[in-house]
Length: 357
Image 1 (cartoon, rainbow, N blue to C red):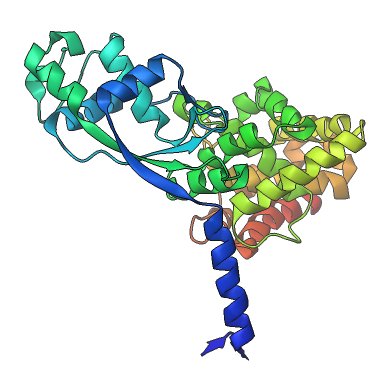
Image 2: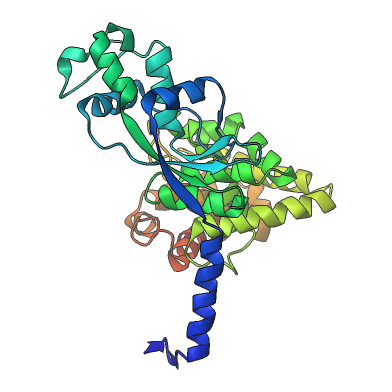
């Protein structure tokens, strides 16, 4: 049996087994069950803590209603994951949307809408249900997995991210916002509110709530600083980059202003030179991430190489001649979008077109 071109030795196997044991110790847990009534009560009473790295309450009304419909029908409900804090309270690692929906239904004014299977319940609140059905809902049980208090923050964040694998990439931006507080992260949060950025890169209200602008700003800095350590997994690369930049910004008090200037100068250039900003067309209402990366970082690198581009007439630069072409479309295509070769390819496509003016 081989690992690449090298045979795996007994020592390799022993080291790998020890790593498994060490990592497993970080995830000590037990399984329990709670009634819906207990879960809703504890949410209302503040006994469950929603950590800052979890997303804001962004479920749409229809999705909340569909979850409650599933609950009433008796369909299986996914596990809720907790971490037992030293004071005995439970921090929600995953499941805050479900728990807050339960609280809102039992104790708030959540009115069911758009139900498919139980269409006759559309318009009902919890208190509109017959008493017998209310009891049945309260008594439904949901399983919980509880990490013990010795699970460190890294283990909890890792579990949160793995549970949400395949969901929206914005989750990683939310994790960074809460887990990596520091001066660099503060700058990212500041610039994510920049009116020019939001004008150039429109996105849906839901994506905004999921920290979509945080993600764009962080990628702009991380990728424009270089991809030497990038290994085709953006979340790991950007997480480590943010950690490193928080440390650097604490040491160098001028760093924030330097990076702020980089960002604003690039956005102004894009605004002046690219007719549609980061959109595909003048009427576009969404911002493809690959398009943002190619234009924003390619523009920054071109300005760094040829500063005089900042004053050259936009008609002379004439980006529309190639941004509407098939070659650019292929460069920013989705296939293998996060592979380093594709990432560097689309960034350098824009950079080379700009410096060739």
